Amino acid sequence: MRMQVLELAGNAMRDNKKTRVVPRHIQLAVRNDEELKEVARAVTIASGGVMPNIHNLLLPKKTGGGASNRYPCFPMA
Image 1 (cartoon, rainbow, N blue to C red):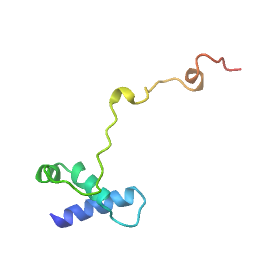
Image 2: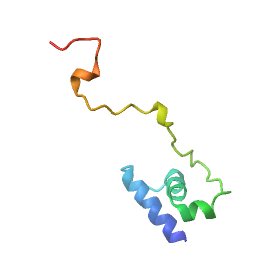
Image 3: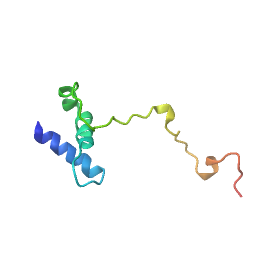
C-alpha cells in the first residue's frame, strides 16, 4: 500500500510540475483513489489542504458561439 501511495503522489507531483513530493501530493493521491480513500477516510494528513470542489453553477457555461456571442452588448465592427 505504501508503494501505491508513493506512486500516486509522484504522479500528482509530476502533474503539478514539482520536483519534491509534499503532503499536498499525498493528500491528492489518497483522496482521488477510491480504495485508498476508503482505507484512509478518518485520516488527517497534516499540511495536505482540502480537495478542490467547484459547484457546477459557478462554472462558466459552455456556448456554441464564438467571439460574437462573448459580448452581446457590444456589436462587433
